[in-house]
Image (cartoon, rainbow, N blue to C red; front, side, top):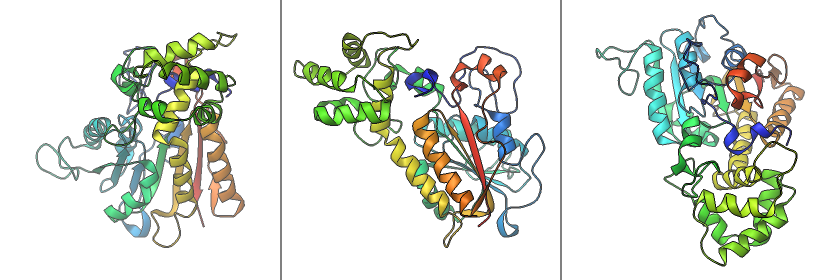
Length: 355
């Protein structure tokens, strides 16, 4: 893995490593700066100018944020969309989804409930729909709403509120329950996976999802430790890993790759990404969820994410089904990284569907 900052608790979607209180770009708020905002707006064809015209077949312009987080990107997009547009927010985290919806409705000109109703009961210039789902379910979400997306964003990081909440179990820097689920309403926790996995399966997760060269040693240590009692906290797991992996020349904690690997396994992150990319590749076909000419942008934070995105988008371009948008990949500016170190490993790729 090329950049230590891309791993485990060193990444974030709406998180900021800096505490500056200055006025940021539209969609940014103190402590919650969306990564590569200007580059994302440019990739979606918005830039700094308000979007013009309509969406597919003369209908409303539809923006789909597949990983809404705290609504940083979506609120910036909503502020640029023409009246009558629709913003669809999707996220696994129900709490963050609710916060994002409120934030985006405010940016769109309304502060009220579903359907974009403003505080005075009048229709907001932009309608906002929030759906609690995995981004891999994007086609089903759009079918259920009877919409086709003109602009799509999938930011594969996660919100700083998730990383910084010890109760989520995502960080080895704070002791908390070993959960790691982004959607706490379903699926086994990291503690449950560790308790039931064979040593070989643990080793595979560590090697494939964490690119951990000490995978076998760590897996053996986990198996030995759980024989003495359940591993239920982040502190326990981090201590086990640190006990068998020497701190090398890299300026990262020895537990970093293990936490990344388990988080990916718990949330099936790479499997969901594969499903999403496959949906993009056939999104313009019959029963389409993507409009003709739709722009699809993905922000990845490490090579395990970026490689399949590069491969999928490259395949679409080679088959004449899409055109690459901008330089590939776009990277955050030095200024952004200085203010938000969690952005340093981000890569943005985008295509426009033409087939």
